[in-house]
Length: 459
Image 1 (cartoon, helix red, strand yellow):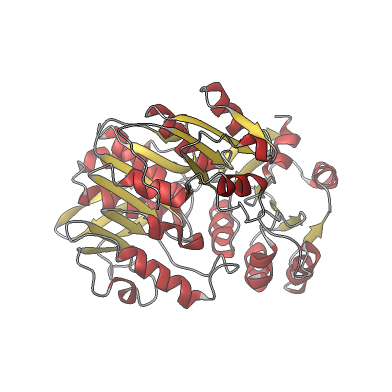
Image 2 (image 1 turned 90 degrees about the vertical axis):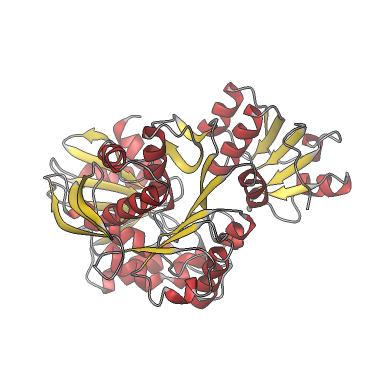
């Protein structure tokens, strides 16, 4: 594998630079003195932000984009073998790394690398822990899978030994990392276009935990079924968090305000319970906050700093993000694209004031939709009314004969009120005709469904 020389910055070319993680890494290398450029399929706010910072971005896919004097190329996981730029990179003999391999090499430059993993909740928990580290004055370097308003983006280059990053399991990416401290938030069926089954996913997380050195630490969700299988034989200490006293860290005396924002006591071994109050709703965010607080304790962060940081945490982009109000209808946007995430988000929404809870859902990838069809239908039934958009293909092609109409039929079979429209225009017109003052509307999915709410709001 090619080793980047961080002491002698060279020319780095990113294929797929517009991705949230790829763009952050490009910005980090740019700030460290590398000559960075890249390409993406479409112009976006992310690519425009890179250009504004002096990072050239080319659009489309072309062999001519690849310069022979490139020292190393970095590829997003969406790049296929037949990609014209990838072909040119190979023919020119330019060494290349995956996004995960680059992130792993960056981690090795820091004394305190921290990785946040899990099927769900990575971005929010990474953001919570980022807020804590920032408030503690640790001057961390941060790589987040979403936009954190506190840093005005998804990447921050600090001047200390702290490096905090999300660790995604898809294609076993996180096995290229070199963390000293790690969080495992949960383990569930997902990315079944790559993993064979849940056992395969659990095996991957166990291998990830095995990367930790003896002088590191693992914080893992004790509610994971047989979590000990994932931690067996580890050289480092293991701390658990969860929903009950069976775990080392757990919440109690949970209350909520009128908007569903929770307040609770954080319980932990040998410490007095500490009251934490959040500005983000939902039981899943209680769990995320407990995990972040547990890691902060292990890192030696003052508990009052932790409590203050979490009380000031206002969320990240596309995670139960308030977008505005139109005609008395509150519009929220959320990234949820897995049945567990949908369930958590809709349960959080149920605690917010509303007459009718609307969920506009855009399924993400054909393989996920087919594999988890029944679970999707059950989760969506938590909304009063569901509107489905077409499946967002992302990296896939429609070879499975699955569609949003199939999901509509499953929701209706379970007694849910579910409509389907093939275009965003039709969905927007339907919502304008049917949503009334006092309703709560959530646009949901990992694709571009957020545009529906933004169009309704005139953003």
